[in-house]
Amino acid sequence: MALSCLTLTANPSSIICKFKASLPTAPHALDATYIRRAAHLADKSAGFTSPHPNFGCVIVSPSGKVAGEGYLYAQGTAAAEVQAVKAAGELCRGATAYLNMEPGDCHGDHSAVSALLQGGVKRVVVGMRHPLQHLRGNAVRALRNQGLHVDLLGEDLTSNLIEDAQKECLLVNAPLICRAALRVPFSVLKYAMTLDGKIAATTGHASWISCKQSRNLVFELRGRSDAVIVGGNTVRRDNPRLTARHGGGHMPMRIVMTQTLDLPEKANLWDMSEVSTIVVTQRGARRSFQKLLASKGVEVVEFDILNAREVMEYFHDRGYLSILWECGGTLAASAISSGVIHKVYAFVAPKIIGGKNAPSPVGDLGMVEMSQALNLIDVCYEQVGPDMLISGFLQPLPDMVPVIPSPDETFVADPTVSPYDSRIIFFYKTWDPYGAFSNFSPHPIQMPDENGDYVTWMSVEHYYQAHKFIGVDDPLAQDCVEMIKSAKSPEEAARIGRSMQKQKPYLIRSDWDNIKIDVMYRALKCKFSIYPHLNSMLLSTAGSVLVEASPHDLFWGGGRDGEGLNYLGRLLMKLRSEFLGEPSSSSETPSLTV
Image (cartoon, rainbow, N blue to C red; front, side):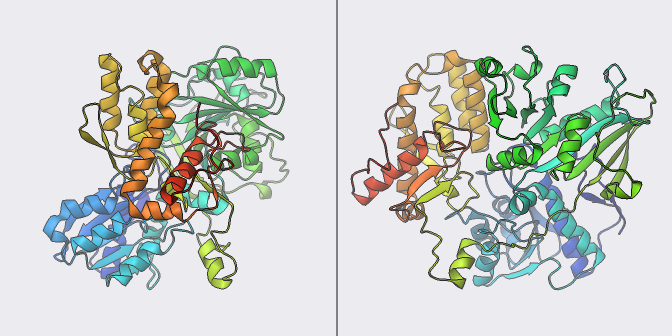
């Protein structure tokens, strides 16, 4: 079956291949075909809400027909398997489920596995194991323990079709794989240049090198990224907005990397109405200008030594999966030399501008011979209007086989080493071992409203964000509550609540600063009271300090260097003491007053 790179026009990832022939009939070829279909479904969620893995599920009935499909919209929403089983109905009985990746339910949540079991699925084909060590193999074991026949694509039989399907499964979750193996976000360098290799004229003028179709694809690429990064020169020269401009959905964070902080006082990036901006700089740079940026709502992060590797490791710790670099040649060269760029998108326009001193897309890499040139891997070529888009990987995707043993594996090898001995337990993202402690975890709660009637909220974060506006006598505030309540994921609820608080602060209830801790506490108490497995998990941490490890939330989280107030961790420790019937330890749970 012929394969070709999927066009960005249909799907901006440009990482999936498309079919060009009728479906094959050999059993292993059918498996590869449906796994590829699951990967295509999984890719639909990329960029809508982050961070989360991309899951897709295809259920094929015993008669060979597709009975149901689904994909995970965002962390905290219905699993792809749940959606597919629901869509298939009775046709699930005796069916085969195709998953692009092994399910990765957070602690105590087995909805994906349970859906397949309850639906009557008899066989499951998994495209790849979960790349995170503490989740890897769990779902496969659980399914096999329940008597289902589970095949891992390519482990028993290989062919070109199977290798292609495996590759698509890897590519659709490349950001997660990079995070797991390399501890940096998956980074893409994008640039547009003329046929003679220039990204601007000698004067610096660069609007527009590429055609409108190419620029639209760039907007889509931004919409699939957690953040977009530029250097100081780009801010000074182009005054970009770096928005996705697609009329909704995910808006990436904007990052400016500058050593000297020599930036203009007025810039489009300082407009926080649509999306936030982070400036990373050398420690001590222009303190007065840092205060100016802070007054505009811009977050400034200082580094002792500013380099691309440390900056990417920092944003890895903040939970970012994918970053799009739209910087100039100097910063691009630095990022490539640091080994943090994984893929390149080069838009080549059929134009010649000339100029000995006109800038090129990549600065000096220290190479003196053509034999030192970096070769792209898995190169794709695509015509976009009059432009040519060339894309490929600068480095191969890392091997998913864990090199460092997980805590559980260490305990099996040496029972004297317990994974739960740590005095401090950190939690942050819902995929972490203790991720269920997060207010973003997918655990609905029922809470009484102002009339005493119980209302179901999809997550603690939905409840918390909505209560910023509850009780405010303004139709817009009431609309905000409804939008947050109907948000498809905790991340989406948080985005709505935070943006409205920033754009329309008058809609926030006047007593919010005084009651927000109590609002969060009530929601957490409900969550840990109605889910026994979460209660047990919390009690199992007795004697340990709980720290919400967000490096940027200095109120609910612990901060990058432990400077945060960690109120979420404090509330959980307070709850733990209550459940244990013990008084709160003053060393663990300082005063919860604001």
